[in-house]
Length: 225
Image (cartoon, rainbow, N blue to C red; front, side, top):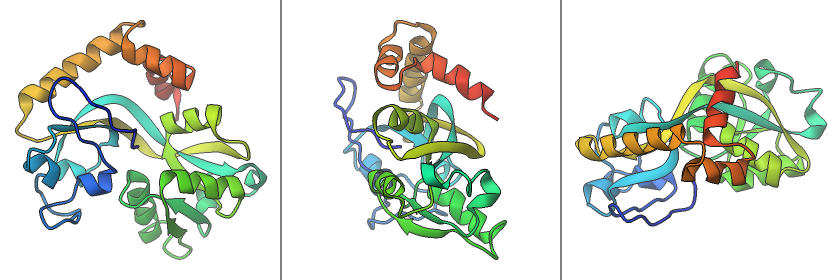
């Protein structure tokens, strides 16, 4: 997903919605091409410190350092619990999803394969607009990362609920230029130290905002089937 940008002391950080951040020089995202995204190639930023899902097409352009494992979670209106019980029930339904996210990629793949005769009808909205559409009951479902689903369940959802996971296990992390191996190694070391210490800054931030530490969340994800 896409947390708010934050400034850091080590390197210049510049974070935007990833569909903009992964543009090539002509200002568009080309999934099948291998290139260094414009913001990194120009030196405007050194890395993307957002929670980005490691996908095949993104790895053609970037190297990832994993912060935590995740799953894609389906979010539905509470009034649709009887109609949407598992992944097979999603075929033919309406979904609100953010363009060029891993959720968008997964849904398009299902529409071309398992659901080709009864595809999901996609409406491309921002993540917050997608949540609002599910809350209002105007859309059957949306998909988000498990950490965002946990946060929204605590702080935002009133008429919605997390239903079930879909797709394979994901890796969520930060993205770097492929040639910046030293910076990647520094981020990897930082993540490992933060995860090991229950009182680390990242663990405490997670505890405040998600109700559990990052280390506890990683343990939980290992149990999700």
